[in-house]
Image (cartoon, rainbow, N blue to C red; front, top):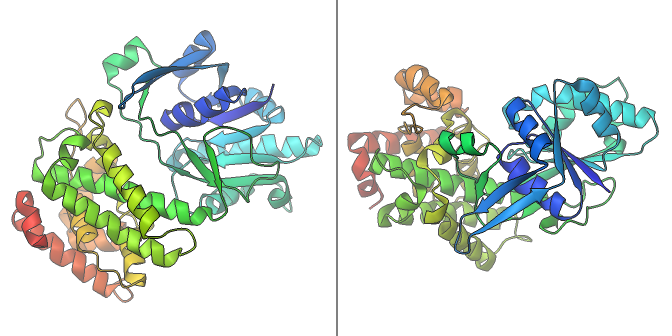
Length: 405
């Protein structure tokens, strides 16, 4: 039986990677730090996924187990006998993965076990470059990384809502998901060939699909949350926001701003027809009431989502490159700075709390320079547009849409 080792037994690791490979007949070995999750996986040998969509269903993912990343010898042994690897730990946690992963890769090569592929499910641009740099810090000089390890970039579009603490106590392995179940990845990066797994969609130009995910899906989703919050800070769910006609119009407008820029950037991949189909499908998914995805979850982590290469500033820079007017994306970017969504206990996400208490009081110019990393000399026009929109929305946040008229 083939085996995949999945670093990260969280939402994407279990709901997408683990599920697809288990269904294809692989043994799935998770590597994680959460001892409770590890113990439950080893005890149950399976977990439950509840699809909350038009056609609800319950999926049992079987033939799974787990090891603790702190037990480096066990992790290395799993890497030695793996057919493929994957990570879904979150970009901020990759530093904790590189050392043991590099050691396992080095031992594999020294033992003549051949190349290995790593499917990188981290929802960031240029993930192979980041990953390569991280691994090389722990590998010997002149190690043949490029010829022995396939660093496979992905575009992850699956939406997985937060499960309440009460539900976690009842079943710590339970996951709620939408019906969408595709894993788009780089067809050209594999050293051992694309695995025969239903749900995997290899693409020749993965960069185009990573950018589409970030600048259409992620940007539109977050825009829905931020505009929902400024319209009514008591609004809880994404479906409530997208059903508001003003928010719907602005979100769709912002997604099309990115869509038009992407068609110009990648004319061999995208056109008006397939972009229209993609945007309409996403808006329908945002409106999935059964999923109960919260504005808090979708909007949290402002410093990351407002950073230069992420969904808003990245999209606006692409719009500028192709001379695409972007009033709706600019409006959503300004609204993001006012976002203070809270979890079920009334608490801000830690990085949002830091943003609200330390960055926001220093003003819009500080945010644009230090968090968005925009240059006053090179991106003066974009900075001016964001500032003007921000000051207009600040006058009456709940009537932000009047500024688009």
